[in-house]
Length: 61
Image (cartoon, rainbow, N blue to C red; front, top):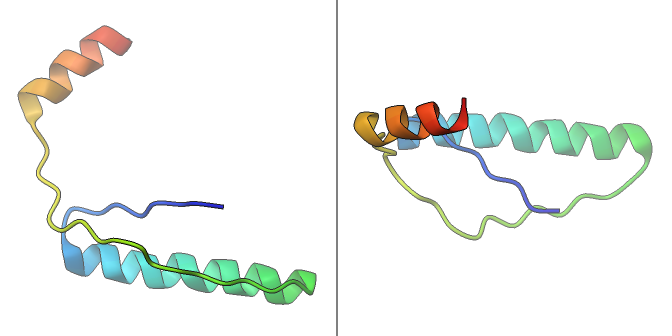
């Protein structure tokens, strides 16, 4: 399984990643499974493009 954690800042992303990892570990423990988590890459400081976001929003809705 692959999953992605996003947040506005690197600090928030790391905090969220730790919480998500703990959820996967707890689920594995509760169900008697094993979990192996590999962090493959980290993208830092997401910057939103508000104009592009508004254009995309009007296209999708």
